[in-house]
Amino acid sequence: MTQSKAAGSLQPIIIIGVLFFMFGFITWLNGALIPFLQLVCQLGEVEALLIAFSFYIAYVVMALPMARVLIWSGYKNAMSIGLGLIALGCALFIPAALSQQFGVFLLAQFVVGSGLTLLQTASNPYLVRVGPEQSAAARISLMGILNKSAGVLAPLVFTWLVLQDLGHITAESLALLDETQRQQQLEMLSLQLITPYAGIAVAILLLAVALRFSALPDLPAEPAPVSTGKGKGKGDASVWQHRHLVLGVITLFCYVGVEVIAGDTIGLLGSALKVPGATTLTSYTLAFMVLGYSLGLLLVPRLLSQRQALAISAGLGLVLSLAILLSDAGSTAISALLWGWAGIPLLPDPVSLVALLGLANALVWPAVWPLALAGLGSLTPKGSALLIMGIAGGAVLPLVYGALSEQTGPVSAYMVLLPCYAMILYYALHGSKPKHIAAKR
Image (cartoon, rainbow, N blue to C red):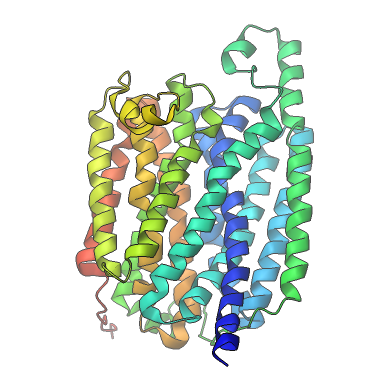
């Protein structure tokens, strides 16, 4: 009987783990895709970061519609539908690559982001509800290890599949060609996207079908009123009265912003500092995130509470952000300390410090979710949708970084991280404590 129970509780974790690995791979392809499309579509810094914007803005636009889908279909079917949308978005990369139209790439990114919105709206609260609340951060940390391990692999696989024979094509080499030769090389680069994205689309579609007919227990989504946001529904009034949820949404906005900046701008920073293989640099950030998630799995809740882990993460983020701003772009002292013993090529110090942000970021997501959803009961689907909307930070804050980078330089632009980590620290120390907000009459 005990063995049967253990097997029953292990099976959903394995299935959800496969999903987290998959959407980690899809999400962190952006780190390689941004410098790649910057080259293919001949984009400036802010334009290139629209690739991340179109991906993450879907979490705002589609969060509440996807909450309705979740309530209508239940967790299991919602995850399967989300996978189908991701497959459609990946398939759209084929006409995008054939046409070399930047707008079609952005549309494909938005559709992929929409699928991930539904997948995350369902999978994160599922993880919280599938076991004891006190160990929710540990379960999400386990999923984070799988998610970020996929993120380590994604830029490497992308570079291998797409650039293995074309790594010699750079902005500098293209500038030496006439217009006809330049267009030929750009078209050749763009067409390299077709086979990988077609393969990903087919694989994810098969996964969607397999999930639909799998033995994953379907926890019913408890219905909560979802209105148009005009304040007429009691459900809206109730959910907004949970102060720790509202501040949790703001915290996730800041967190996802700094996570995306650390993962998706490191390639642009590397390109600006003339680091070879800039499309692989996201793997360094994600490797430190895997380390952070592993530490979280060992320490939370055994030695650290979820709030303590969140406070430590925010403090480390503040320290590293200040170190980036004070670093010398030409120095490799920190890089030698981090990578020299392993024989890894030395990087400029700002690049190494941005990679280390992965360690500071790792435990924020798994700590905020259970703290923000605590005590919501039947309002959990609506609360989850609001938290998912916080992912919009990944759309907005990288653009702020890009604008600052064009004005002050790529290193100084990391000043945008400081207020974000300060907000995360405030939530850990004060904002995450449940407190009812009285409704205005």
